[in-house]
Length: 303
Image (tube, rainbow, N blue to C red; front, side, top):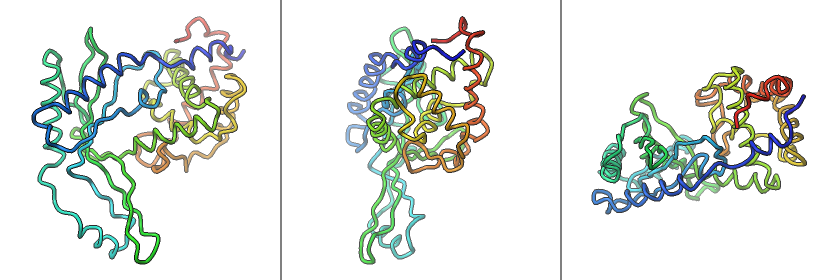
């Protein structure tokens, strides 16, 4: 017995956004108006499921990026020695760097939320859930510049913008491209006649169902991983009906070679960082099991 169309339609619905929007505005205003940050050049924006409109009922943490532009992290690895020297000639060492910015962002958040038990995570400053707001992660980072070789012999190198941060708990760097991820998600949603984002929400809810029913562990697939996984699915497999879309995607994923799958940003490969493995992806794709178990488990469904 397959999952009924009306259940998949329920799973496709976007979760509430009003609380997340209000909290984001409060954080953004707090940082932009803080006395220690007033003269700094930085940008504040949302990332993740609330930004991408793929949040589901039960999603909580709001991811807010605070990206410093007074300094940046360059990646010259794709440039020749000559091109690298040419680019570096126009750069100088920053006097205000990520540790300084993180300190000032943390202090600004503490001043803006004086009654909250603010904590420091490896990558973010954490605002906990209270009776008045949902939780949030504020991520201080630098602009990241991935330099691209010039197209002509005498041309200048260009760069792709991302974000770069340092995980102070795991002691390693993290690079991502949230703006490209957002743009690519919007484009794919359009190419699939507005089926992409609601399908991501179905698969995120399906993960919750599998966790609740003991089919996978909680950490088998993150929301970001699910979104990236479905980004690699051919556009023509989305549409017609919820059941047809889910079935066609699962059938394709079961036979696909995952090795060269990319993140939704289109720049990084999905499994290169080691934060998600093909083994866990295969376990998650085993969601096909629930199509066969639905008749026995329907009363226990998570919505």
